[in-house]
Length: 90
Length: 107
Image (cartoon, rainbow over all chains, first blue to last red; front, side):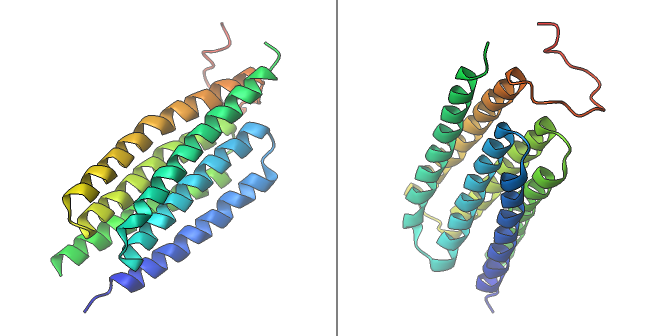
C-alpha cells in the first residue's frame, strides 16, 4: 500500500552516491575556490539528506538542523571568500 | 494515495536535480561552469525536497518555517556564489580555453 519508505531509502542511497562524487572533486580540485564550491555543495546535499530523513522518521524537529546547516554553509562560504580575498594581492 | 504519488514525483525530481549538480561539479572543465552547475540546480533541488516536506507534514507552523528556510536558501546561495566567483577571478584561476567573452578583463 505505502511505497513511500522504500522510495525514501532509494533516494537516500542516490544522495549518498552524489556525496561521494562531490567528495572526489573536493579531494582533487586544482584550486582553493574549487574546494570551497565543493564544500558548499556538500552542505546542501547533507541538508537534503536530513530533509528526506525527516520524512522517513516522521519527526518534524529535524527542520531546525536544516536551518543551522544552511546558516553554517552560507557563513562558511562567505568567510572563506573574505579570507581568500585578503591574500589575493590586490 | 494521491498524496503519496505527488510526494513521490516531487522527491524524485529534487533528488535527480541534486545528483545532476554533483555530476556537473565532477565533469565540467572550469571553476565557473562548475559553480554554475552547483548553485542553480542544488538550490532548486533542495527547494523541491522541502516542498515535499510541506506536503508531508500538512500543518501551519511547519509550513511557515519551511517557507522561511526556502526563502533563506534562495537568497543566500547566489550571494555566496557571486563572492567566491569574484575572489576566484581576482586570484587568477584560469578560465576554460573555449571561453568566448571575458567582461572582467577590461576593468
